Amino acid sequence: MVMLGTAIYAFGLHYFLIPNQLMEGGVTGIAILLNYSLDWPLSISTLVLNIPLYFIGWKVLGRSHTGYTIFGSVSLSFFLYLMEKMIEAGWIVPFQTSNDYILAALYAGVTLGAGLGIVFRFGGTTGGVDIIARIASKLRGWSMGQVILTLDIIIIGVSLLYISKEKVLYTLVAVFIASKMIDFIQEGAYAAKAFSIITESGDEIGLQITKEMERGVTIFPAKGAYSGKQKQVLYCVVARHEIRQLKSIVRSIDPLAFIVISEVHDVLGEGFKEE
Image (tube, rainbow, N blue to C red; front, side, top):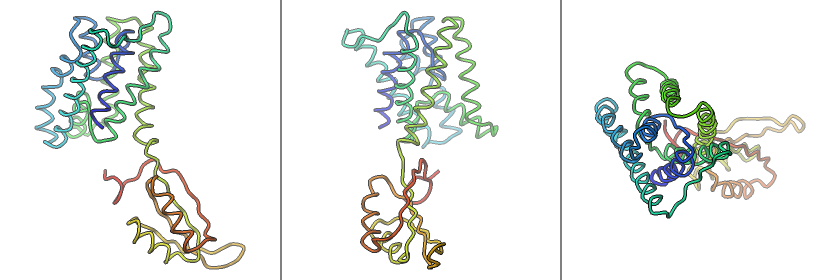
């Protein structure tokens, strides 16, 4: 999945971004500036710029995190190289426009954001500014978001020496769309479901859920306002594909149970993901 994400990201760079002389933040942004000013291949400059950061990250952040970073950035360089060769061979014709840059910016943002979102969603990274931000956070206690934003502003600001102000503004549109896509892939695409079940058979239902689905269940005592009967409220979070199974368990024990299903965009804890 990390390779799929870097492939989509590389496609967005070569198909939408670079042909229209737009920019990107981070180490990729520096590589793009080198491409615009010195005509250096993006695949090589991206990898070369990341190499010093590998060693620093290995020493400061540890082997595990740096291993994922090396895999992600090497994968990105590979797909950038593949795209360069396919464009040279005429197998892919990049989208280039002279009057509709907003379209290029929108699609660049969607593809770049989708690619990075997949990479981040599955624990990977493309290196570069991410390493610098993590080191600054660990050694200085600085916010990773602030470090990344500051470096991106500096890099995009320097790009004014090589591209027009209008292109920089279109770049900001692409960056904004990309950030929203990253959030959607990381959170919105993973929508777990939270079940609130009001029933008089809470203990039995909870036991069956725990036994059949191996999901945790929290039971709250409750009382019906109209009937005055003692009831129980079960709260349980399940993955999307488990919805039908949970409904079936509840209905088989208490057909009259009242069920409320809510969207959950992020879940930390046993059975889901750990921080």
